[in-house]
Length: 479
Image (tube, rainbow, N blue to C red; front, side, top):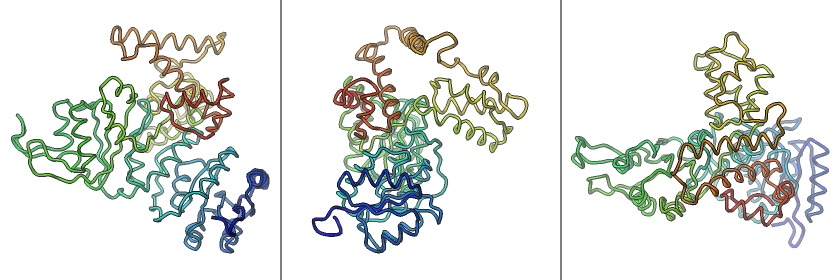
């Protein structure tokens, strides 16, 4: 609601960069808003206390302090005020601390002006928050400032104060359990247990016992009562990894628990109440499993309340150097020799395709920390340790030829490995999906999530792009 009945809403823009203030002011004015600007943290608080502004857009770092420090007090005095935080400090810590301070939204710099204008409109339409955000610790586990990771940080910051079920989607090695732990550790259940179970690692006949526990004598070998993972995670978070590998009969019982909140141990009669937050993860396309009759659609919708897709490492190449240094530092903290990468080595790891994603990079850094003599890791050591070699165009190859060769190599592995073991819809659709999904994701990342610019980059119209995003399970993005 605006300050005067029928008047245009007023937006406060607080940023110490004059150019950013000017550009944002012009864009918001064209959109029909009134705009007031300030270049200091003190000026932001002063304007807010003077009852000026319906929405605040604020940077974090100012010459006179941190823009987040005064927000909790300001929002306590102005509970209807909506705050959008923008920052070049593009880390999970910044996104979460913005949420902790009471921000309505967080946008990393550089941001798209259309995205910012849409965020202002959403803030004006949103109801006032009912409860303050929980306090989060300082230990933020995720590394990376690429556009793809910024979208992950924004989603995490929004869901950690809730107890909604989350479905983490991503290739093997992208850090799904790490994200699940971050959601738990920063959420309202962080003082209760975090319990992880890998559905692919449990024999089919023992899954129900693993999840719900069993009574003595329930089956051969059950010589004593055992608690299940639901009971162990009481009050906390249960992480169901590789949920796509769960057999259908166990899916049916899990669905009943999620619907009713009650369960019984195998061989037991006493009904127990399940008070857990469910975070599931998979590297499979669950919609394809549903079409093939291998995954329950009703269970999918129970688990997929908030989908969170993790980008593969090849879609966040800007983060590779920071991740490599982080893993070397962590290896040193674990007692391995401390090493550094020279510029040529950093360039070599940036050229690799990383089929094993972040896990492959971490393993490489630990291996190099042990095997390389001296304090510095060079390009030759990286090249010798990468197996298989980086799938990039070599000397004398065009980019197109290198891409074609890489695809041909992957297809040969597919067909040679699986032979007649065809996916439900055949190899054509499987390969098309594997190529088109990263192409769409990278195009959106390159354009800051702007669908119009991404469609122009791809040479297709916007409606076609939207249809393909839906087909590939990439969800809605910024227009």
